[in-house]
Length: 157
Image (cartoon, rainbow, N blue to C red):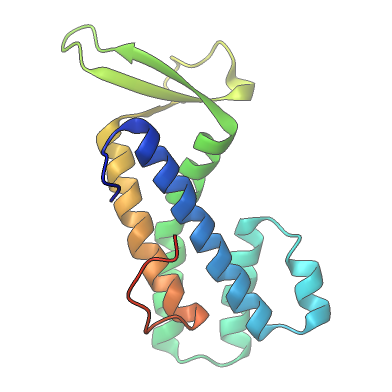
């Protein structure tokens, strides 16, 4: 967790840690694919690179328990990836709950202009961001092991 627990530092920390996770995926793929294939895969979207990582684990006959561990990491990663996309490509709107006067930050996709208060819009509270940051930290540790950094004790971010 960042030393300051406020919106800017939490969002910045989240994006930095997601970048570290992305880096770990690149490291794994660079170390396990041919140079020619890596040159192609490196241009793919993050989700597709993670999928290719899972395929490589199967192709290289990684033990079933490691493949299962990876599958669980990916399952936990999907909502974090979605949140990252909302943060990176959306815009924020601050409002106050009329009953509690508690601040609520809503994250809207830019394409959802004028629909931010509909049920499908993403409303993010600070506690949710903190929980997502904690999950992201755990995921990064899991991906570190697959990328060959299992003995490191400090975060890459």
